Image 1 (cartoon, rainbow, N blue to C red):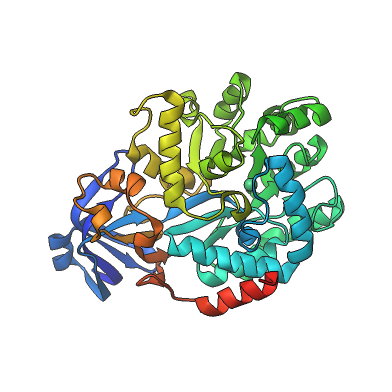
Image 2 (cartoon, rainbow, N blue to C red; image 1 turned 60 degrees about the vertical axis):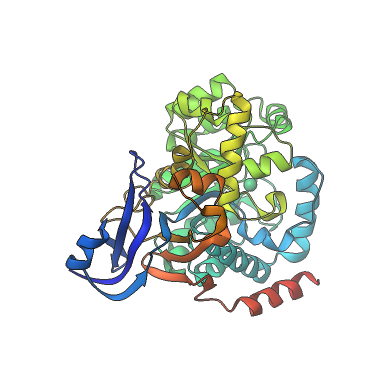
Length: 435
Ligand SMILES: [Zn+2]
């Protein structure tokens, strides 16, 4: 068999299937953007002739991490709103966005965020931000698989659009995504939250998503005050708003979901919706601890996200995995509440399932798209390495990532971005915010 590239003789390949398969001394071959062979190094050496061979001895290969909730352009606002809760945070950030975030700022911030994500082993991000075309152009330029879509508020919001203008943009969105190009992503629509989008507007978004087979993501029950604000303005809890408007039955991805009551959980699980758990942001803003162990036993799918850089303050999915594991154990006062393999699967396969992309992404299996991260384990903090899942969650970090591939293209090689001149990008970011 011929292949474009083979990662040869990795110390471990962490497959991230439902059986938590780990292969030792294994190779992964890639051709035309897809994984064409995974198996024992010795066997693949005989069976595969590759144009490029990357020596993966001493390395650990994982599926590219899937960040299920972020706001990439907010890299430009890192550190501007500190020591405030969600409501205080939004006040400061929305004012700062009006100052910095025109389309050029959004494109630059998304490019910076995409480079940060990729260098840390994240290959797919579900990103929510206004000026989505600009953000998409910026992220795709760095090589990220970037899922974004029009954002909806029932008021003018930071981009100042009327409802009709938002709907016009949304109707044009599938065409825009196709024109910008980049790795395959689903069409997505992004109502900001039930407290900022009226129920009849949510219903219009659901209608559009149904017509275009699109996915929906929205902030939901991030903290108690958000629930109270929603009850005050809509007369019901956020999940009820989603159910009433027809959004919930489309299996949306609910960002945060920190404060879901029993009724919410039953509805979320019944609809096959997902929670994008963002422990870094939830801890920092003191929003609360989403009880993901109970959610999972209720039948709710849980993926992981960083949230935006002004609330969390980076795009480090390794940090998120570790926080998610430790927080779940603390909440349940049980060190066995959740295992490392489940956490790694949340950051990969469960994220892919949430996006409706599990046939293409989320595990290292023949036929899937080649979205991979390769970590160098030849370091004191990863030696000895008894169990790869445990090492990934509790000891590894994003600086261990050496190669990253998206849809078969190497976008990080030897810890360097292949497509972006990073020093130039950093200079542009500093110039933009005047620092
Ligand atoms: Zn968010």
